[in-house]
Image (cartoon, rainbow, N blue to C red):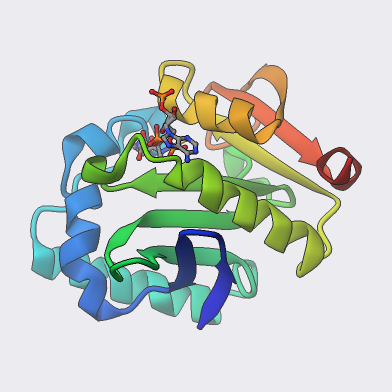
Amino acid sequence: MEFFETDRLIARTWTLDDAESAFLMYGNPVVMRYLGANGAAATIPSIEAMRERLQQNLDKYATDPELHGYVWAALERKSDGVLVGTTLLKPIPFSDEIPATDIEVGWHLIPEYWGNGYATESGRGAIDYGFQKLGLSEIHSVAYAENAASIKVMDRLGLRHLGKTSIYYNVEVEHFVITRDEWER
Ligand SMILES: CC(C)(COP(=O)(O)OP(=O)(O)OC[C@H]1O[C@@H](n2cnc3c(N)ncnc32)[C@H](O)[C@@H]1OP(=O)(O)O)[C@@H](O)C(=O)NCCC(=O)NCCS
């Protein structure tokens, strides 16, 4: 299923055939260092483990009512079909088990494809999708203060910096938001 298209990218559902490409992100500690609570997202050890993780996530997005309808997309480059990364638009976990109600946009790219504007482009597509297709009224984004590359994406997209917060993921992160009115201005 296709979620949305941008000039250079198609955001579509992941498949198990993407395991090798996904492993170039989630098997790489350089990509993983700012992911997960306290940077503790475990690097995936093998392509086989990556395939299992993709299956688990596909099942989760298909069955978990809290995630249903949200975006966990593989980003395919239109010019050659290469998978360059992922974009997400999903409920953001609150700290201490409080059920999530805010929606976050996020991006991960295979390092080979950094520096081309793909995260910004896919982020723009995901935000459009959230406001136009899902009818959201605001979209959040968070990153560790040290994650300069991700914070630059938020700045390029025009997200508003609210400062530091600890209300999500049980960690302290920089918190950005944009309302539908601000986006459409
Ligand atoms: C965060 C991450 C996705 C950012 O990747 P990125 O390639 O820097 O971001 P973009 O795709 O938006 O590309 C922007 C860069 O490409 C350049 N660029 C080239 N062509 C461009 C274009 N057409 N449009 C916009 N930028 C372009 C920009 O100048 C910028 O480079 P700079 O940072 O040196 O100024 C990447 O670092 C990553 O995958 N990190 C690991 C996962 C992660 O931490 N994700 C975020 C969790 S909060």
